Image 1 (cartoon, rainbow, N blue to C red):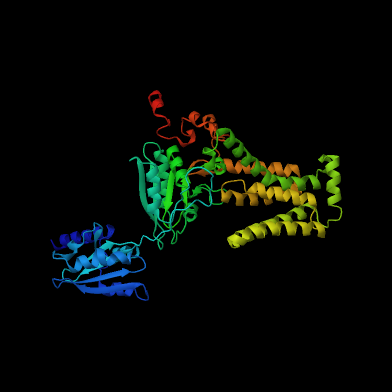
Image 2 (cartoon, rainbow, N blue to C red):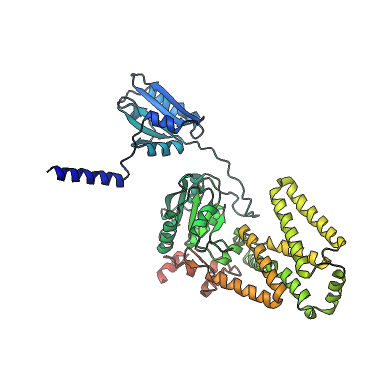
Length: 498
């Protein structure tokens, strides 16, 4: 009998450990130890009008101090209830059972209340709602369309999305990332449209994130990428709620993080990196022209300077005679080969670009423009670079900024250097080989296990209406085929014909 009782007690103890119920009890001394050397932590001891004693423990920088007296202290002092915690009218009163719970609530802006007579601990959420105002997007500016952008408050960001999508099918699942930062994460999707397999993959990837500090959306994306070593992002970053809503309507997933204004959108393809919110504001002909111009600019940015080096080094016989005379005249006194000449100028351009980004806003544009002109002119006069190369470098630098995605702009720079090296050794054949490797790499990527180079590979002809050109919106009645959405039609009258 004694063995059975002992075994039963051991099983109950193991069960409590598995459920997380067995933990260190909350005491005032332990909380004092936890908040030691924290100047913003306060412990207050008071008594109600009935003589019942209670203690308050909180971190004043994390709570709304203006509401502390009105919402907690005065109701407790005047409480005639038993237990007196019932005197607090707010609904966000939670019972605390362990030190881990107490510290977690306190560090997320709650006031801990200790009922000394009943030896019970409670937490009242009184989080500081300090946040900046909603402003215009600085990374994706448009002339027409919505002007609001996300802030660092995740609740406010969810509100801006739900305001545009007032449907109960919009689901928001809460996660926590970062063992130290405990960053709040919310995954949004539209149930009945988004592919459940994609939702499961995203949910599993977020749950598997094991790191101590997740401070920004790119930190989370680094752990969720299917291909960590690729130059190309597999998640779209945006601070525009209208872009997130449009993506949700297509059947994609949106991931929001607290304390960062940038959301993650997935799955995406390579071609989404060239799309701008303004594409759906302009007339479809103008939007198609601008989108085609971005693809052309990307191609120019990665091949123009390598093509110059290839022609000047290996294939000068392919240059028209009149242009060849100009090129020979500009390169007559240069001490460097075309490769080193181009490499030096590209490195200088990157230095100027980085300097303009790090400088104060009011001086960065001036430094970039004047620095480029002065250094370019000085390089020509000193005989370190040809006039032709200065022109080509300027065109290439400007073309790289036409891509809306900043991460792709940086990837373009690395690709340019890699193709430049191939062009210096193998000429035009090296450029062709580099482009083939780039296409093979893009074809091998995926975003949340979905093909990154769709709808080109695999081929989905139907999705080409919003690829290189943007077809009129009334023609785009079907959601992207590569997403394999539950509900394919975007118009209600077509549902019956499915």
